[in-house]
Image 1: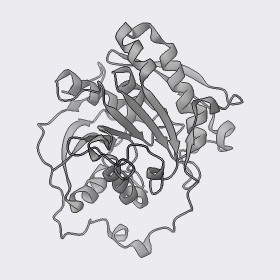
Image 2 (image 1 turned 180 degrees about the horizontal axis):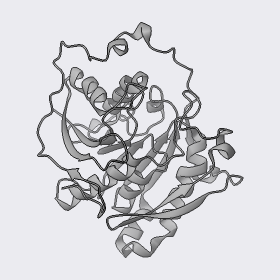
Image 3 (image 1 turned 30 degrees about the vertical axis):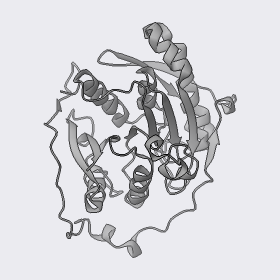
Image 4 (image 1 turned 90 degrees about the horizontal axis):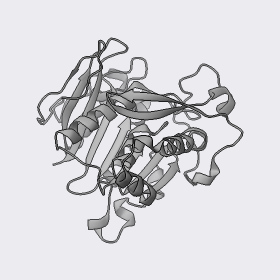
Length: 307
């Protein structure tokens, strides 16, 4: 089972069975969201860029505090949204800021589920290539790095999030080496770590392991794609799924994603995203964990695998 807190959190882990939510001919059942003409007009995304570790913004104050996930010790960074984006008390502003400075519950749910699957022998990061989409703090990617991944690439919509939060947070966790074994320390020093900013519709042009960029398809793709709280916006789900298909290693790659079952007011959620996946027919989906701790809407962790 996925890890549980000692407080009121309840996590259930069903067996791995193929999930069937919608028939191939049915509408989504979300009314206006089935009609592209009635969706909000898109805002031009910022340019896609690779952000170098040396590009940390020194003018932004970054502090870190510990978070213990049932024995997994990590550091989570904290920066001021007003200082970075000139925004106050805002979770997101579409087209400008997509909430990357906030630590969402799904990131912690995802790490617990990954740890549980590792302990059960269902997966391992050792020697694998990992891509975290919509990374923000980057905690799932940092966890993969600490568990021996050969490459960890972080992507976020905003370059500012990478410069002001993701990179400093990674550095803070690597500096806090007391909980790492000597072998893991050596692996971290050798890991290929990169950072990419941009919209999901275009960022594949920069990612080095996208299948279209590698001549030998056996070396193409990421072994694991991780994402937390990325499926909230109805307008971005298809672009997100298209990117996953371009990036996932064939035939054994896996996607782990954590999110709320529904995001009220914006139309997204795990079930809406799964409808996109199912209608395409290329992947199977399995529910890894369900979290009903009362702190928010029901949260879930899912795994996608190619058929």
